[in-house]
Image 1 (cartoon, one colour):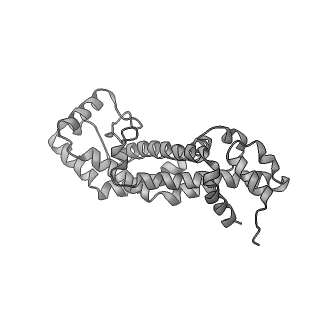
Image 2: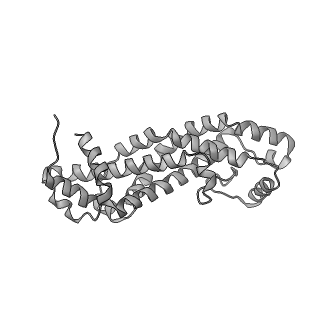
Image 3: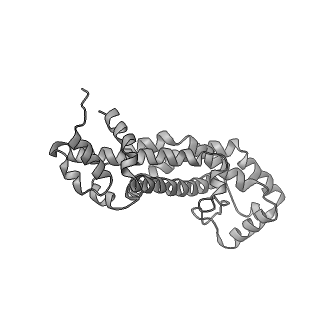
Amino acid sequence: MQRSFGVTERRAVLTGLGAGAAVMLMPAGLHAQGRGLGLSSILGRASDAALDKLAQPGAFYGDESIRIGLPIVGNLGGRSGGLLGSLMTAGDRLGVLGGITRSINDAAGVAAGEAKPIFRDAIGNLSFTDAPAIIREEDGGTQYLRRSANDRLHARLEPLIDRALDRAGVYRQFDGLAERHSFIRNAGLSRQSINRSVTDQGLDGIFAYIGNEERTFRSDPVGNLGGVLGDLLGNQ
């Protein structure tokens, strides 16, 4: 059955998206539901906007704050790794690794463009058990999403990254380089470790962008209300 939102409920959703104090305006039966829908809508729109930006050609590589570094065994989640990391970075500067860093970042962008349904599904399955605490933080929804769904998102993003890296020829590039350079062979890189490293770093970048989008939304909740109410009404 279709149900329309009244003025009081809309006002409650708006204030819930911002400060959270006037959420109490919502009728008791709709209190938790409305807050959850409002937060889901913010995160859904933030994730869509973030992934759209990251799917643009050169987006990952062009932003040094999220640029994906070369995979380093022993420090798979990071962007550098001791002596081996220094060798790989030096090799990149000297041209030994050619455009492989760019290829890795471009592959991550392709995967980001395919990841919207994955993030929307994860957001839809969230249970907002501490909505006031989430609302108080400018990127509280993004933080909550990462705490609650990071492992699931990682597992579902890995196949997209793997396929994109394969299509971009990254695995073939590493195999060819390993035949010619001992420091690449000694890195002990495998398809799985490369994929895991790129997925780890890619998720870091995606969550950073989602957080930025959430903060932007919260800075102008009135201007963005129309889209959220559209989402809310469409779910009724």
